[in-house]
Image 1: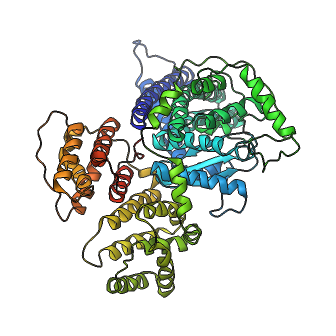
Image 2: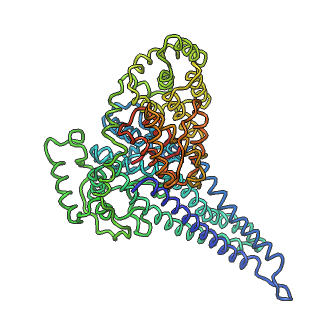
Image 3: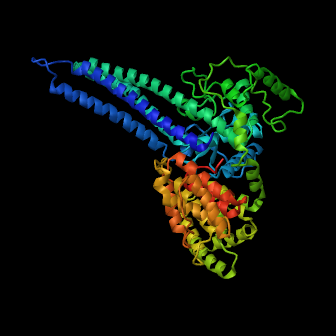
Length: 640
């Protein structure tokens, strides 16, 4: 169960979704055209043929309905162009402080940062639905660079760290496999169809009133308004069915991806069990919960099986724990009750034990899911081969000096820390770079960068990019002009000595890709359609650069490159060519070209790069940084 296979399934789901919605819109247009024809154009000339007025009437009706649905959908999608934070704020969520003092919020932020570092994606904005006591969460946005992860207060009150990690990993899988962009478009399409019913009510209220009755047209207008209401709600009904069916298939895959990320099933399975036995379940109270229902970790309310956006809870748990029986929930509920009643229990001392405000209840038997079970043991075994490691990511985060982790929480101090990452330890060069910083941001920024450099200079190479990842949420808050000045200044700093080292290049490329995408989230590139042979030269160059930076021995680099080529283009004879000395510009063009690959081709490319990196049995800091930058440029996570 890998990211690329899931992304391919999402693309297939997207195509089916577009087709089904197109058919629904056609049916709506035909139905309204028939009503308009009956109400206003049902007459024929003496020769029995259709009149020109009837043809123009039907044409006008079709254009008006299609324009209404299209423009309404576009309006709703554009209203969400701000990305994940716009969706989170639309349901009343509040942003979690960058440096929270509350232990629950600090744990939430730590878990999300660790998942982001492990997956090689930007740290998302973090939101909390304070008044929601059900266990639920969602991720929203157009891409990883503008993503927001939102959780309910119920998650913090009822889940322990492993369970919270499982829920967050589930949401990150939606970030990584392209679900978020599809979810936002679903919201727009459903809104466009529902607008027909709203317009119908307005037509009846105004068009069918006294002024229309005076000229005898009230009945016809009233009929058209009623038709708009009926057809609009019927279209919305079937749109919700389509939405729910597509969401259910993606949720099962996201559960499996969460296991693959966390390398254990207890966390996400425990969260699902608590949803099943706690009275609040996963239900939300917010008024517009149906609009975001398909994004959530659990069901937003008690919907019928037709509108359920998730497989039944028991089936989701059984997919993760194949031997699980519904009767086991009774024992699980009893154990939670005992923990809650224990004298030493408290929300802080026994995380996830439940509280008095969430009494236990047993749900009814759910309808069986039609999805095939996922053998969790096989997923864990596959994950253990390599890939994101939350423990290692947590260790990296904890290895960072407190002064730096505190500084990167605020926009201006994060800017200073990132500038210090590009400053050299050589005195002569450092003097020129300090002048560049002062010219761009002033003497105060120069002095602050000097102070931050004291800590940055002691960082091991593998900590530099994770520190930049932690700074990303704060850097996004800078004004557009200041962000661009930061990128320009970083470029000037690393070129001050006339050359760009690998670690300098990786830092700038990573920040440029992510900050520019965060500035224009709705313009993030879609998944490509290219096949690997069409990008052969780019593949050869990127693999050569990775191989060359994996060893100082050219023969070892050649061997690593050949291993990558055999995986990318099996059976083809190819000759090694060392990358050019001025490799950055060709590398940039190659990454932009490779971003247009289809998901399965990206899978082959990334696995080829992994073969090159593992050729000598050692992964050095340069190889790790290059792989992180390449994956970010290709809009995919680090390989699992």
